[in-house]
Amino acid sequence: MFERLTLHNFKAFRDISIPLKPLTLLSGLNGSGKSTTLQALALLRQSWDTRLLMRQGLLLNGELIELGTGVDVLNDQHDDEEIGIALHDGMGRIFAYRVAYDPRGDLLHFVEHPKFGFFSGLEHQRGLFGHCFQYLRADRASPDVSFPKAYHLVSERRFLGSRGEFTAHFLSLFRDEEVDPRLRHPDEPSPGLLSQVNAWMKVFSPGVSLEVEDIPRTDAVRLDYYYGGTAGISGSNPYRSTNVGFGLTYVLPVLVACLASPPDSWLLIENPEAHLHPQGQAAMGRLMARSAATGARIIVESHSDHVLNGLRLAVKCGDIPANSIGLNFFRRGPADRQPDRDDPVVTDDGRISSWPDGFFDQWDKSLDQLLE
Image 1: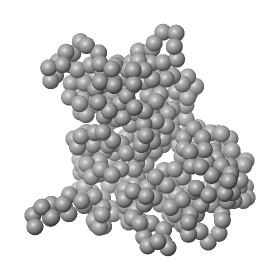
Image 2: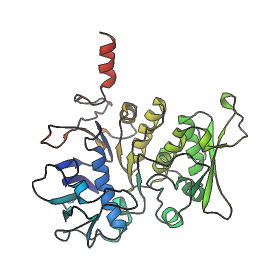
Image 3: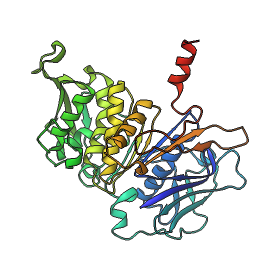
Image 4: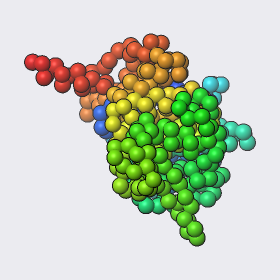
């Protein structure tokens, strides 16, 4: 299991070491390095999927991310023109990938062959390079009448798509798969994935349920929402996802990823709070913590204090040990320095050991101004 990520001359960072916990939260101002951290991991996975990581180098543009060319990823304050990404495991091994700078190329070639470049058959079927990897970008698929199928990606790799565009197909295929008991909603006796998704969706929008249906003779799946007679809405009429608000469609891939990911899965998630009200954001934080406690590795970028509070509540309620959550707060340094990183600690009672300036403290600052 990888326990640390180090970056050299990669985008925002000249040199940085970031601990990786079962659940790692990345926070900070825009442009401070949060996305850089996720993109480094996605870049390794993208290069692995294209079979370049073992023999040639890092592919900057592909299925998961589009980073441009070498000039777009070399750190502005570099002392040399070598770019490095390294993963450190719990056995003292360092999986280091060092590539040469090419300003106009999007395949950056290795300076030397990685020392631990090859994984055993077991290792490459799990974890960051396994079949249960998810990378859910901030620009997730918008509500639509139907969503595409991806037969191999979904059935074999269990991949939801980097924008969550294959989530409906995933639900269609795995609707009856049993969810881990520790992740099941207390009000839903059925262990099936679709039943559990519907139970959890009611946390985000009371009374809502969804159904997926293959569209005959097409490579598409229809996604409909229903409301059980709440708010004066008929429970028998299906509603297109385009008519029930962005929030439900945006949260669906994150929810499915948390419920359907077995131990040793890796989930990279950008802005899980997008288009959710505060109650839903806190619930999502707690659900991600519960998923991490079952063995999934979750690295999440968020601007939401409600997500943070959901994680804290998960610790206080015993859903996950405090030392399984890692907090990272990035902030811009002077022009000639890379962003700084603080790592406040969550205590066993859900409190935060320290609150660096700018770390989810805007409410307090605004309140002080209002009370002046």
